[in-house]
Image 1: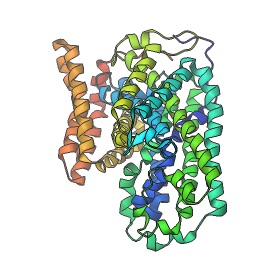
Image 2 (image 1 turned 180 degrees about the horizontal axis):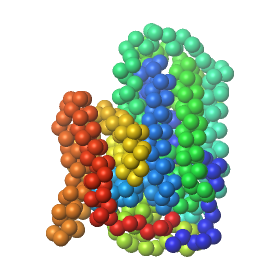
Image 3 (image 1 turned 30 degrees about the vertical axis):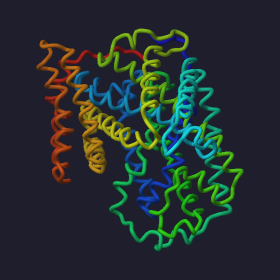
Image 4 (image 1 turned 30 degrees about the horizontal axis):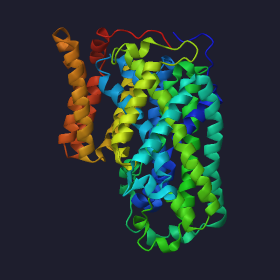
Length: 490
């Protein structure tokens, strides 16, 4: 049980924590990527992505407000159905965030490449020294979380001000001195159309950029007035960050030197876009500021996600989806599960060591995020049937966004979750074989059907049938009859 005097996050601190987690490494890459993929439609693409994330957030916050448990974003399907049914979703939500910890440490290292050169990166691959520097960043995240929510709140509030100041200052300088409206003429946008918007939500990293919204639900038991503040902090922070990204997009596209647009936006391919832009414009004082921010921004997301992933793993342990020792040892003063935090630290370390660069993991992480998102509308519809009219289209849209992913990434995630589910069934033994197959197989079968199907209409039909099955009152009741109700813990 958490200590009775544990400090609680205020609404202001909750908003800052969300904002911190949504302004990570993505802001230094996403403006270029979405311009490449959509041209002037970039602004509409950002708005569509934000509306989608708000819809997912409303589903998730509805459940978190009713069950303000530690790591609720990894536990929602275990609460609405049962722990076996929730295995794929919990794993995807947790593992996706755990990998992000590695990508942010990697990003902080990679952003130093233009200044340290081949010492840390050669041919877009981190060197031994580069990976050692990444490990140092991971150790910093661990240290901040080690001292608990009180230090995390104080550090985060300070870091948020610093990390938000830098991009806002960059935007202000670009808007004031380097905007060329000719960059938005049709000459640079004649390859684009409305049909490019939907696929770009994933391919441009917009899901990755906004994904930090769910961090606050992992701290649900540590927020003041959770019924009000969880939803409010998420929605407010998403709107703030959307405005930020729209201004960033406009300043990036408007400030781009004309000589770099001879092949349109498709021809822009800088390895470090914002830094590359400031160098091209001769804004060397901004380049220096970006050097500092390249350490602060990803690191703030990294330490936030280490805390979030640890709370998610704690929640999975309480639902019998992970080893019991991960939820047994809660430090009475620091209010953290030390085994869960160390487990996430070493997982992030493994991924950091095996990956060559930041971009290598982004699409895989996005696929896992989308699978994790699917749990929110399913659980909300199961727990509150009157919300199904909202949850149903949210689930369909999430599935359609998955349709835009490369087949190889869908296959990788499907194989991964199939192995996990099979391992869980084997551990449960013959006595639980029937229930394990009944509850864990529907989603795995659903993913395999999506993978083998190539028609968008077939994709929609499969999605509709799956949602109808797993949110049907009889199936939900059957699941709940075999559910061990979660303990009323924080």
